[in-house]
Amino acid sequence: MLTLTALLFSLSIAAQSNRNRTLINAALHGWEYEIRAGFNIGGTLPQPFPEEIRSIDSYTPTLSVSIEGNMTKWLGVKQRWGIITGIRLENKGMRTKATVKNYGMEIIGSDGNRLKGNWTGGVRTKVQNSYLTMPVLAAYKLNPRFTLKAGTYFSYLTGKDFSGHVYEGYLRENNPTGDKINFRNGAIATYDFSDDLRRFQWGVQLGADWKAFKHLKVYADLNWGANEIFKKDFETISFDMYTVYLNVGFGYAF
Image (cartoon, rainbow, N blue to C red; front, top):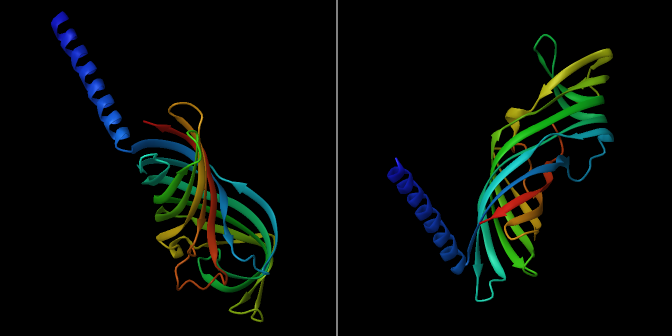
């Protein structure tokens, strides 16, 4: 029993030693590995802000977490410039309440029928999407603790929800002068544009890292979508919408 315990202890020490040698060798060749955990705060926004949206009455961020593994290749003798890439699993979401006028809409009635036209009144929207994201960034060390980053990211939509309901208003069927359908006294109608979301999205990422301790980092990254979230043939909402989120959290560098 003692012999088996001693053997297992020796194997554990050897494995840890090999791991340390591997990380040291990677660092000597300019490689750095990191795992991160954080959360996204932001929204899916029209750009520019359209006249159809008369006011934003409320905004609530949802619990939108991110988990990322990345690697950095530092270049040159001084290793001040580097290239970062990796894989990030993340959620981006929000809930809003707005007052709109002549807002493009397709609602689902209580009988399941769909009506398309221009909505004037209240709109509640829920967005909760999941992505598999790959950043490609340039990094620059201002000093041993502070690093700036800039580049692009590419995302694949893995889970989608863009839905909500309309209330206290009226729908003009087909166009702004069409037949008027009123929703009053608590009556609502739902909508769901989830299937119209674009699978591939990309954008610009800007951020900074601060090394609080030898291995622990604090980071903040702004992710700004560059392509519209809906498919090209989606015309119900007449203006373009983009994702804009700030990702903040902690990282552990090996």
